[in-house]
Image (tube, rainbow, N blue to C red; front, side, top):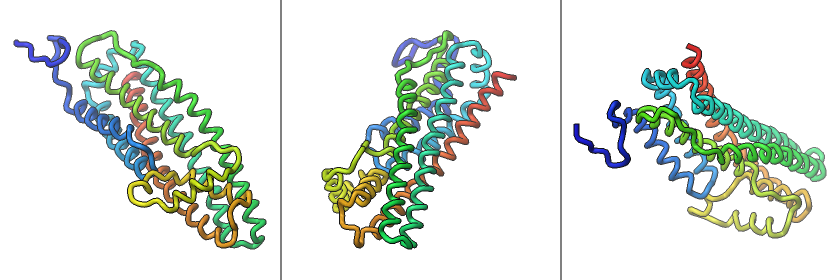
Length: 289
């Protein structure tokens, strides 16, 4: 048999060509790695999360393959199997933090909108609720900051590798690790996006930036961060840095936009969370068989 390898020599005891599902997963992975380099916006994150779901649909099928089950069962005592299971927990934790942060922000945004619609206490009541929202955002940002520290440590870890160097095993292990890394990277970026820029107090430069955001159009508009826009608008409102007359309607519109973004993110994260659970359960079933 003649050698036709274009890269490093492969084991002669096993076919060099990976399973079609591994190739398919790698294609989805490649598109995510490219998109991860693009500047972030809510629409781009929605696309990334959708593409991530597609990738995990493929990974789920891959884990159920007899070929994969044979490798995992055979290598159950190997370090990479333990690290793969630990990684599945990291994914679940990061996904939970992001979802909790979004749901908490959404609940506070709805309460604020309700007060704005009623306006029973006038501007004073609205201002009090605005400050309550900003205080809740600080709690969210603190939780996100802690989660980001944990993610940073996870992303610094090197690739795990099997002691069995046959092509079938190394291809599978490399793919599963790459999937974990890109997922953690996207969740890391999403948490930063949800947190928005760190601001301890309002500043004129922040308000000025907000006003510019309202005027941009076309591709620039896609780069807006709805979380940052709402934070900045409410800070300027709470600290009387902008005129309040007629401002409440604009704030309501911004809060509605934010709610819409949050809803999209939450639905995508819930779908991903279910995928993470199913894949982890499948791996545990293989090991406990």
